[in-house]
Image (tube, rainbow, N blue to C red):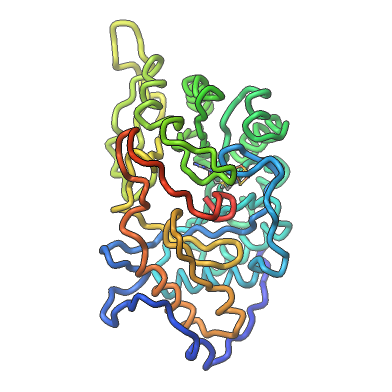
Amino acid sequence: MSVQLGMPQPREDAGAALPSVPGARPADAPAGLADRYGRRATDMRISLTDKCNLRCTYCMPAEGLEWLAKQAVMSAEEIVRIVRIGVEQLGVRELRLTGGEPLVRHDLVDIIASLCSNHPELPISMTTNGVGLAKKAAALKAAGLTRINVSLDSLHEETFTKLTRRPFLDQVLAGVDAAWAAGLGPVKLNAVLMRGINDAEAPSLLAWALDRGYELRFIEQMPLDADHGWTRRNMITAAEIRSLLSGDFVLSPDPRARDGAPAERFEVRRRAAGSDSGPLLGTVGIIASVTEPFCSDCRRTRITAEGKIMSCLFSREEFDLLGLLRSGASDDALAQRWQDAMWLKPKAHGMDHVGLDAPDFVQPDRSMSAIGG
Ligand code: SAM
Ligand code: SF4
């Protein structure tokens, strides 16, 4: 079902008198969401809400965060308009819906249907914690969602509950199965390993995913938790993840081009006595944002739930797109604000000191759920 969402009418002159971003994107800058270092963002991540029904220790505090007021969050119409400007004027070629938890938005299916009807060729994926997904997977697929990533850090009830502070493992597993059954494949699973909590589970999590045809990706824990508990020494590095997996599996670099993807992919074979070349079981991804950063090839642009442009997860500067939109700005003025903001994208995220003795990174003010991971 395609739902037509009404669009606010822009005032012709609006935006002209608003201050532009300091930093002077030159008039002869390349088209689209280019930056000073020769990169161009084509992969858009938009956060649909800051709210969430889990409290993952590496992301949210136990008591939750102070949620944004309803009117501060982008409406469905505003989301659809911002995406349209990104796609039609600025070269966005991929869209990921995220949060907070996107499934808590009651109008999620309508948003996807509108996006899909406006941009039938645009791949639209979503990152979710999977709570409540079982009931919605078929509707999401019917609305036009292309792919899904479900976060799953443990298959053990107790560990899952310890990590997420909620006893919803069964719901998440049912959601993963429902997504697969609805045709939202390839289903990708995201896992963050925490030392002494679920790191020993890495090989069994991978075996479980491979058995079912899901693509597991391990994400290095980043200093984006609201509790500020991250330390360089305590995080599980990509090198450690490879080593944890190497007892049971042989990993070899996936020959397919990485093409700007955050995950480095490996082909996986089971380690058999006397042989390293069992049949190919599938692939595993490792997102090594801290120890093996990929900033030089970053193609992402982010919009937070309250419509702020973030050129990097670790940006300390944000630029208000929603306020400008609500002031009645034209599409061209909004596109220009977005381009100006992206022009200032930092060269690298600042965590890329290598070695465990490097100084700890100064954590940005926003935690992951408030940015949109
Ligand atoms: N709530 C949804 C979910 O959990 O999938 C979407 C938003 S969540 C912020 C997006 C992804 O960020 C999840 O896969 C989560 O595991 C990851 N994440 C959250 N905090 C993180 C951190 N400090 N370091 C690395 N990944 C993190
Ligand atoms: Fe919620 Fe996702 Fe953050 Fe977990 S990682 S608290 S599910 S936003």
